[in-house]
Image (tube, rainbow, N blue to C red; front, top):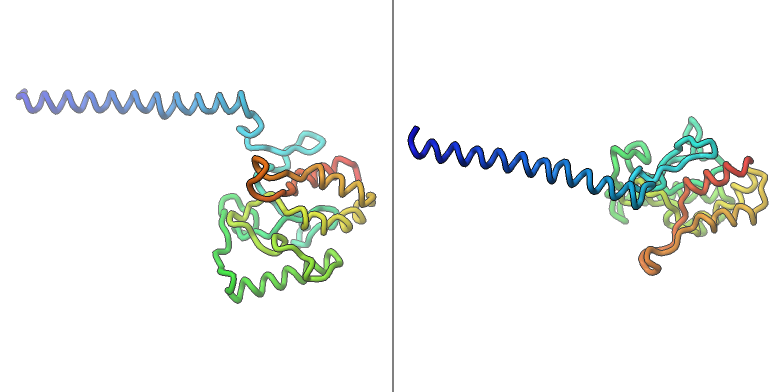
Length: 204
């Protein structure tokens, strides 16, 4: 065995040992460390921010939007509705995306006008009173929130469908309204899934 062969063998052995060591430290050890810290400090978030109903059944995640419709795709009147979704067939976590249509795209303009008319009819308001987030999808198509304005627009319908006083439904909306991040980033939002689960727990 000449010197070159021995040198190549030593280099290869060092490379293999380094790869194994780094795999164990960074691929296994680091992952276990971060997972353990997450479970210790923020267990709910680490597990996916799962939302459970009154019976303990998982009904979704507070981080992902979902539809509240019947088998034909019609909005269920007793539930607050999310903003539209362009992710797959709607709120598909495996196909997260926006429509990628510009504001002057005729297809987007037509779909917004159609959604605005449908929501105005459903909520019994003028089309001009329908907020922008009610008719436009988010960039991910999975936004779990709506604006307080869109939530407020739906209060009367939900209250009537559930035979609840309007002020009781408004109180639930207020309870599930999240303020700006760090007090100044973004806008207040309402988590639709958590709000609907809270209304279901009222038993009506």
